[in-house]
Image (spheres, rainbow, N blue to C red):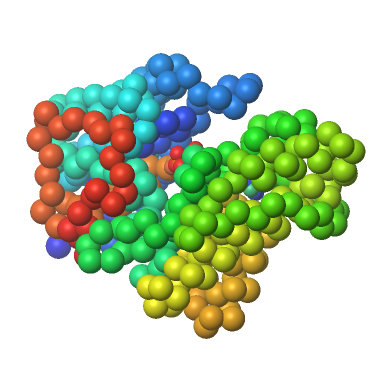
Length: 327
Ligand code: ATP
Ligand code: FE2
């Protein structure tokens, strides 16, 4: 039987990407371009314009890299939710235009859910507690009764944004996460507040306190080390509780902050002590990409999902609103 081929298109926020993925888990291409600004902020209409300007070229390159033509493609999947509305609209319009023109089946998918499911494509994990830590998001998630249940989450900003805010406060450029990781290697521990509330986390107060300490003359390196140790210990504590609660034997780290080696090390030590396996998505796939959208398209298509050409975007669809029909 012919291998199913899906063209995935991602465009929820800063990154526009296209990738060709197969039903046998083969990644044939991965092309992306990121809209960036000096400040690190994002102007939604400008990002959408970036997507519109580059979409044809990126999609053509993804097909070329895969050595395929539109004729070979069975499904077009695209990131339908959640994200910045202008970006989602630009992405949807392109996906519909192509599905119509080439008469392909269309599947709109949830971007955050795709981050989770592609974790199983990129690693050997099978049924983990998911640790989703990006700029905007920090959630501890597990698949329970056909839904991705959010067991714990940040009560204010995401872990990446917390690190970036602290970085801005001590004069590091954007994104600060990697720079903090580097400086922390030469730092010593200074006590900071620690805020875990049940299964939830709060980062903002700690960031404020760390920046205040910098203004009082504490060393950058020591503060970088201490903020990492504190925020990562909080996260590790909640993940440990989630493993105990769900009785799952695997933990999977995903999202942009997964690039941090110290975070992975702390989680790995905790998992070892609990005899659980620890996995982390490879850095090159931890950010936004279209492979995950292509793979999610295949999963949902195989479970019978098809969208019509009137499909609409949903800029705020939550992870636990999606019924997991493909399991
Ligand atoms: P999404 O919208 O999908 O949640 P996002 O755009 O908010 O994603 P990502 O692109 O997944 O975020 O991740 C970016 C974040 O990761 C930034 O906040 C950045 O500082 C952080 N980051 C990147 N590398 C490291 C690192 N080595 N250590 C800590 N944080 C890092
Ligand atoms: Fe993302």
